[in-house]
Image (cartoon, rainbow over all chains, first blue to last red; front, side, top):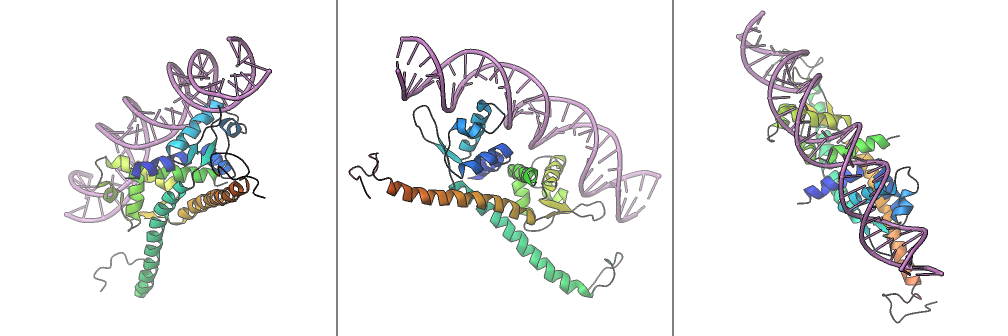
Length: 120
Length: 120
DNA sequence: CGCGTAATCAACCAGTCGGTTGAATACCAC
DNA sequence: GTGGTATTCAACCGACTGGTTGATTACGCG
């Protein structure tokens, strides 16, 4: 299943530096050195970050001499969106249902009628 | 900013067990023991998972005697969706632009468009 | 060929993470 | 109060993570 894949994607995006890299790759491809430039960490650390993004399927790389330009793979976003939308919708539907239930329960007086039972 | 918040949310959802908990909470509120029942880990471990989800703002809890029912907070999903959609759109736009650029760049004698040149 | 550049590999370190066990807290019922 | 139930706290453990430094590979260029 794509369960493990989803874990890798969410895990990859849990790091602010990696999210920032994704944000910058959204504006265009870039090499490891270019990506590493703004941060005050070593280029090796950034290389590791990119590897994580690559393993998650968020980034692909081609070859240009000794350079390995990184490219953002937008397709993976769909995987996340599908997962999120699914449960968001369920939660919202449930919330809406709860609203009507609460309205129907409006005949009950007081806070929550602690000792009361057999409400029907 | 909500940068740290986004990190917590993605980090929380990086764990399959926690995603499963979210999935089950989407169908209705539940107590810690109820949530822990399907897994073969201790209830303490599940309690920790729920705390992570709570710190990420994905879950809220009320009180019912000694029970602390968990409730899924759908609002946080919007935060994720906004982030994702933003960069997905950028990536897609860029992809579309790249298409046209490649067509305009047809004077380059690369692999694609082998015989074509001087299109303008 | 040797030099500089781009990137990775390897080993290491401190800190976090998911899990455990055991004790403690909070609450209801008798 | 005593007992049972629901949950958390505390300490600990092995594995993973993000970072470092140092060496290595893979190029292109004179």
